[in-house]
Image 1 (cartoon, rainbow, N blue to C red):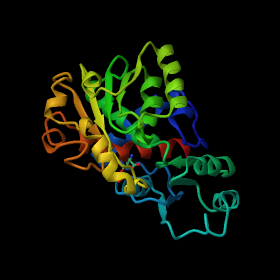
Image 2: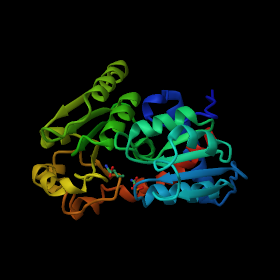
Image 3: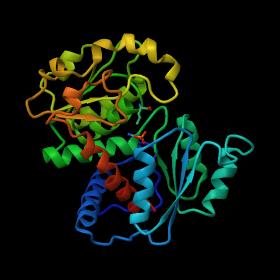
Image 4: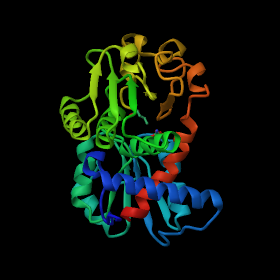
Length: 310
Ligand code: CP
Ligand code: NVA
């Protein structure tokens, strides 16, 4: 039975039920097929999506903007200096005003609380396009990509090697909710948020899967179906890049490390990749790598989210 998601915001995967997650995957599969067959699917004819970006973006910006056009709507881009928001206007007033003009808002910014507040005050759906804490659209896309490639999610082992950042946090929610085993290997001082780990462990227990946090990348990758990494210094952490590079050296995803994974493991990365740091070309460009299918799927999954909530 289809669940009605109209009007719902997507701030965190933690706010989605398992039924809603699979509804997004089913809708994405259908929209991808229609797009590839050239079948019109103008489900959001005449609707407007506002896209607020306080940080740079290639995938999120282009896939949301192309996606809303393909659905028959239009996208309006607002860069860091375009709105009064954060300068002479607060989130409450901004949310109330733009809700009168638009049909949906996608926002990428620093503070996660700002997105929570925007969704609270807005009367239209708000979609989180990345905060310092979470990146739900990316992880929904990653799960959809694994489902396409492996035909299942439950029972697979996902290893994430690197910083306990926004990607790690959304993976904790996403993998635990669908019953995948997730092992995160991070250096001490860079482990994921403990409250999120605790919540994920509760979901995993319910689903009969395991969440493990370790500092050992080899143990994490052992028998993994998915080996995932992300940049060592995220947007906003540029000043720490050199220090992080030294501390994360042992966490590079290279041919030696992936020998420990299953032969048919998938290499995944949200991109942008800093090749030579967290991953080397021999892995990123190997037959196991699905990074560009993963990037493409941002389009299909976000179109599904927009079609369902707007
Ligand atoms: N993966 C991702 O969100 O990429 P962009 O920063 O290019 O949007
Ligand atoms: N952790 C990265 C993800 C980029 C998509 C960042 O926040 O910069």
